[in-house]
Amino acid sequence: MKIREILAEGRPTLSFEVFPPKTEDNYESVEKAAREIAELKPAFMSVTYGAGGGTSRYTVDLAAALNNDYRVPTLAHLTCVSSTRTHVKRVLEELKEKGIENVLALRGDIPADGKVEKDYRYASELIREIREMGDFCIGAACYPEGHVESANKTEDILHLKEKVEAGCDFVTTQMFFDNNILYNYLYRIREKGVTVPVVAGIMPVTSASQIARICRMSGTYLPSRFKAIVDRFGGNPAAMKQAGIAYATEQIIDLIANGVNAIHVYSMNKPDVAARIQSSLSEIL
Image 1 (cartoon, rainbow, N blue to C red):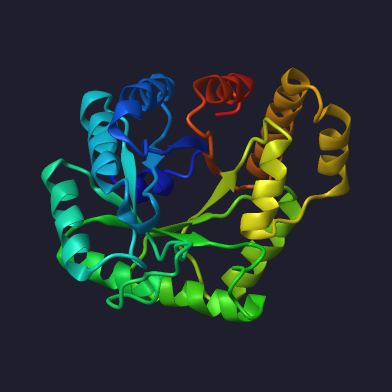
Image 2 (cartoon, helix red, strand yellow):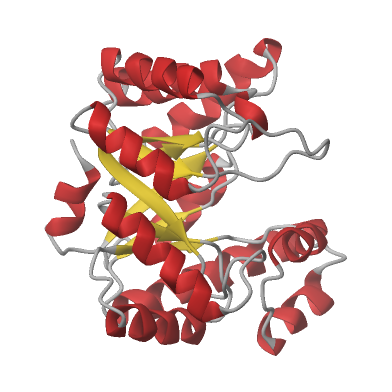
């Protein structure tokens, strides 16, 4: 099923992200975690794609298993900054053969060694090419706080419009920890004529070590309430996990109450985290 059809229903939905293993010997454990999350029957699941396409085979295999064996609509990530057109075409053909109807088109992060291919510069170019290759439902990323490489938020929204005009059907946000940031962002992009559905990306922070990594990668704003939770419980792993799940759940409840119905949880291959969030929302979804 295409995700645009799921979102068009207008009801609250909960979906989860998983990431494939970097090596084959870890595939079984990752597949087991993904299967346990699939058993929660989310609206859909997404499967990430490693830098430089290093996990592309596992992305396709895992997405196919979720979609075909566990009957969960699946969104396969596809990045292009380190890929040739030939490689992208081959991956898209594999997805089509395996019945995957949904693709999240991303530029991807610049690899640490700085090595990139020259076929693509922007996600909008990838989106346009996917649109020409078949009847995929195409998602893209958006950044409520602005992409770290954008000069300002106005420029960032112009890039978002380019993705929509290229043919994406919906966008998923980068993680955020203050819902007001999203509400302000939605107002700004709607004012600029971006009308595609926006899926809110929520990250349950279950360990203090995640915080430094999150800030380093995305520069995400951490509200004082969130910082207080980390300061108070960061040294107690069990307490931090419980508090992080509670914080994410409260974010989701507030979002749904304010009309943001599509929620995508960056569940980090943790079935217990996904299950606890879903259980807390059982009467809301």
